[in-house]
Image (cartoon, rainbow, N blue to C red; front, side, top):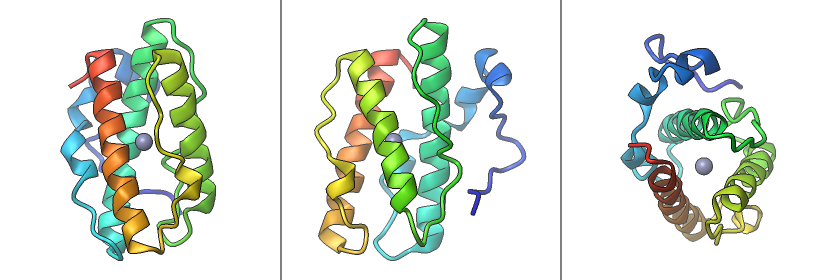
Length: 137
Ligand SMILES: [Zn+2]
């Protein structure tokens, strides 16, 4: 399943490089999702992928090449593959920017409520750290 992207969001690298892409970034949007809410999870996945795209483009402009995993490609009902790729993306970004990457995404079980909320909370903090390091708001 591909996370749906609203028409008005411009997400190609060229357009992001021109500065349009940041229109879709909303760090708070990573905090709203509730356990068991598939629609909310879909929205979370979308905002997360948008932010990773902006981080990627910003880092490329700074000469900090990172991998670019297909984070828009996610099935909210089975996120095992996505969790793996997303973790690798975060590890690469944290290493380049010299940030801690304190969460081990692969140890979290999204079917366990406490795990889910722990992951969501720490992940949002990490996105805030990356955004601050890159000067993206
Ligand atoms: Zn992320």
